[in-house]
Length: 391
Ligand SMILES: NC(=O)c1ccc[n+]([C@@H]2O[C@H](COP(=O)([O-])OP(=O)(O)OC[C@H]3O[C@@H](n4cnc5c(N)ncnc54)[C@H](O)[C@@H]3O)[C@@H](O)[C@H]2O)c1
Image (cartoon, rainbow, N blue to C red; front, side):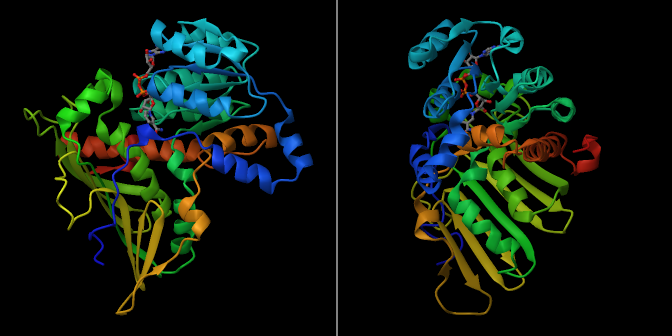
């Protein structure tokens, strides 16, 4: 099977992520009854700011957690607020329109933020300054200044921030990536990664809220969406990107220059500190029947001793110069289990530990995409140093 051959990729939309009850239950079963009780015994009172599509999904995930009552729902849209209040009716949460009121609520320990992207940093920094734990949807910020603001707030806060990059919790990625870090392919040299969709830009317009198409609100596709996959590439590379070059724009239905619309396709090339080289593309223009280059999301990592292909539920190792069939690296459990990002958030508060997708992951991922966007908009190579953020 060739790296781009049939079956490598798989179309997937992060918006459709479902709550992860099964993994929670698996984890619960693995713990003894006593320690499970201790883990869940501390009540953590929650509030939600932004309860549109994703915010309601986060609310469902929190409603599945033990001892995590919902104290308040905040949204500027009354319909969204009412729907969320209905979901959380067993806790009779307060309903507010102004997010600063949530920051001032003394009976709220943790805040879930799922507003449009341009508001994340300001709200997250205010919550951290008020000593509240934050689960913030990605991206952490859409400019380097915004990311810097949250990094500084998190450093002075007694609480922590977890970012909504749930891919960090995918068991198939957690199973595959350590093989690369442990030397299976020798030194990793090149990463090729992709997120292609067979949905047309017109179809996408029909199901995404309008603000996504304004880069000043969403940060554009690379920052709003590519942040998931580029973060996985950072994780695989095990290093920080040093420089990036790229190209992209809105091609259809009417071409628009970068910065004026949500790009429907772009390609970027990063060089990392450890000299790993990454080529990544994201596009809405993948014909359904084009199977030679699989659509969907996948990663191929080439190293000195072979290559690993990674997609949902599979990680295949191809030994260099061998004609034999590739070897599956994942266990059945890693192939099939679902992630539990929200479980880690509550466990980290109770166990006083840093979550796996904590501040460094959040800041690095956002900055990686911000430098990529700058390279595309300005048609030049952009360096990490230019961003001027110390993480
Ligand atoms: N992790 C994931 O897989 C994933 C998936 C989808 C979306 N997201 C992210 O979640 C966030 C929300 O996306 P969405 O698709 O739910 O958008 P949405 O438009 O459906 O929801 C956003 C909500 O925020 C509310 N809002 C706007 N301004 C506000 C303010 N000042 N105060 C309070 N509420 C305000 C809106 O009324 C709306 O209900 C985005 O950052 C997006 O990138 C993450």
